[in-house]
Length: 298
Image (cartoon, rainbow, N blue to C red; front, side, top):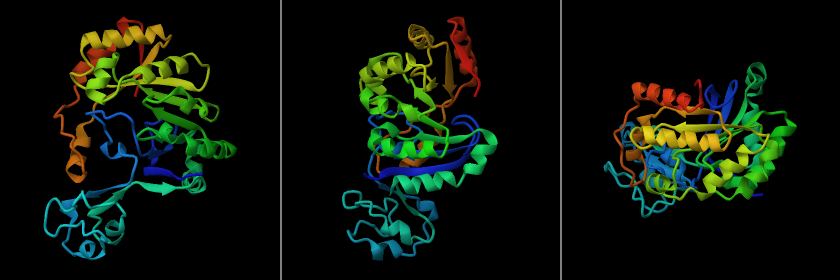
């Protein structure tokens, strides 16, 4: 079995499912959302990041790079056309100015990392949350990893954007207790414009998951000011949710802090300069309730 590529494991999380949770972030996503909170998650391969404010000009990275991809004294420290993200520079950097984003782990290695928090799960009703990126893209790994989790009695929650063929997630459902499904737009044109993909698979998967008794499904809408928060968009969201028999939705406030990551990564993405609007959120909640769609408290 091939290992998984993950880019972070966060512990003691309180907003990614019930209880205290350990969240594993998988690398790779089929969407290219212009508002993605984790831009380092999109590429399925390991990649490098440079934090110039940490650099102490020790030159260790210059000596160790096998591809001469480090530029001395340059804010654009990495020659991205030469770098293969081997991570040797990051391993030697004493100031952690260079970081390899993405590492490969086996099912047994990852399970051991998660079980280190078992006492917190047991005392709080928590467990493991799979996030990303899009975890389902690594379904072969999950098909081996999740049964191991269930033999240990772990509560498993999967966060997904749903952009894949249903067969990929169908094979995993028996080992998943809860699903958080991020529904970003009520129409395919907006998905294509702002997320780089049509919504055919997303719509089909949401419909099929909503028709099942388990795992428990929560639909989440990330609020992107001006892109999916106008009254007509909320009305369209509500109409679609009612069609699917979904009577409750969770709203995710916009967080602009992802923009600080962009200068450190090899990406052409641009900051949106948007900010959350609590007044608009109140209006959105009221409009959902007008359509008989409840709003879950965060």
